[in-house]
Length: 126
Length: 126
DNA sequence: ATAGGAAGTACATAAAAAGATACTATTGGA
DNA sequence: TCCAATAGTATCTTTTTATGTACTTCCTAT
Image (tube, rainbow over all chains, first blue to last red; front, side, top):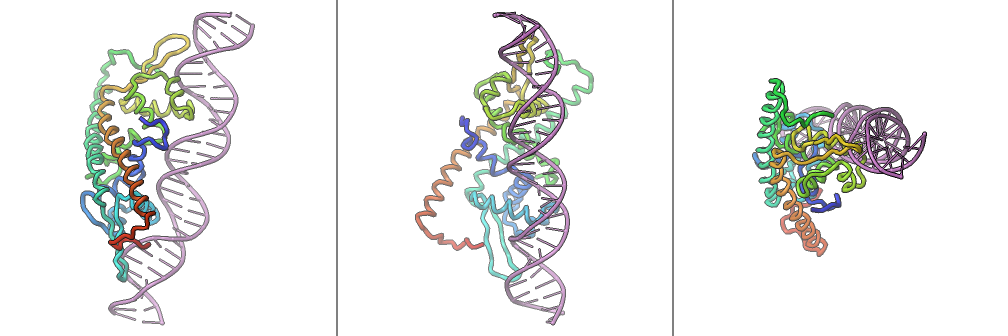
């Protein structure tokens, strides 16, 4: 384990997928393949072009996605996962599964608690 | 895949581990076991008590960690992963591995580029 | 009586991330 | 000539996260 946050490898990996938009961008590119700028914009109706550009550039800088410009008018720019970027897939997949289970877990937990079942371990109390 | 960010399961999972301090808190509790508030404070010298409290409470609310109060003076409060919280371990582990590989990947990439090797695929150009 | 240790809380502030809105270049077609 | 389409930039403002510094409570040991 690295104590220095600058070098904590979990944080390095986290950096690829955190932010309000990166998870969705990655999921779309992973699951649906190549997308143009305007397609991503349509898939994420609330993102501003500025934010979309920023996130795409960050991912590109980390070699996770690839940006391909076609010299046409009007311009066409396509984004896709790099082969290297696809190594993130198992992690995203695992998080997806965990997240799904977690929603269930918390639902079950709240149900139990509102049923008025007292906690027998006496761990509560602030 | 869930398009609604409120329900995107990747985001649900991400929520457990994002933030400036959560990864380190989780790694310490996972790898070194139970810790008192003051021990965590010592392990993370730059965290403020307020931030430490906030992060611990969030993790507790999600059933990832457990808070045990001993009615002593001076007070003793111990934090530890719950059994459920340990299901995050494979994800953290995978991210740790990926992060390590990524640092290598980027180092190799920059080395290649500063060697002046031209990109043969013509994908550059902003 | 007073100081000390543990585990916090309270309130004000700064830094980082995200959003709103408007603007640009290019050029094929009406 | 002027409009439309695509892929963005440029500024400014707001929201969200994280900091800084001080204060509190409880009992125990000096």
